[in-house]
Length: 371
Image (cartoon, rainbow, N blue to C red; front, side, top):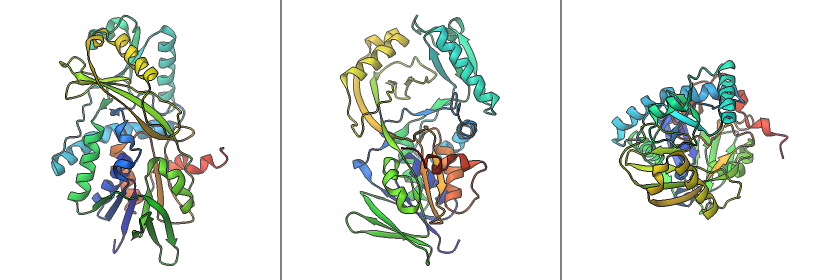
């Protein structure tokens, strides 16, 4: 490995997982994190470790998601042993709920299509009478649902804390408060130099752009394409309640602490990460429709957060052809994919493993002609 070193721009869930994976491979890593001023997606991540319905338009993504949820327990155990921080993983299976026969029919067709194209994701379609055996107290408006035994949830903020702690425990560094202004590639020395807005700079032999929404600005400097845009997600949190919900759902889950998390919206509002009364009311009404007893729960918090999204909703993972050793990673599923970002992407982007097979479908070049 010699003097190989890696700079990861972005200390959120994606960047931290890749950085931790690179550190595991034995390379020195420096994470440049914008810190609390960033539009950090981990604040608005719903916390699902989820595979059902993923990749219905891209089979490789379905397999990628399945591999991720399969490897999550190993990541949870490793981080807990190394750092003492519990990322809160629970994988009892998860439910998607339908409120009409038409929704149920469409859901079944979608899941069958995923598996017909190699997804290999187990699922069961349940009618209402079977659903209430798993979800007592479910509202009368719920007509059925789908269940996947691989699904679960975790705590995004504790996961991020564990990844940062793991990077430091293994001898690398996380530098906060860095606003990256530009990146220079020296082709003769095969070296990258990253410059912050306040005049600081850092050199490394490899670099990863994992800056979320910031990738759109930084990618062209390294010959890469990342047309990411913000989508706002609003989330509600109730007071702590007596445990009643063993299984997470796509829009509702009870945390280990007892609070119920209700979410989330998907809104095109530019860089406005605030909240709106209209959407909060919509989230609350849907939660009460799902579990009528929640009408008596007190809401204690609501927030909005911005998540990076590509035009087709799928990730970008790519090495630059003009600046070898420069990579980009953009994904809105920072929790679900954390394990493979660590165990697979981190090893690849640090130079310790080959690119995963069939990964050309994730190149940002697929958006070259998009406007």
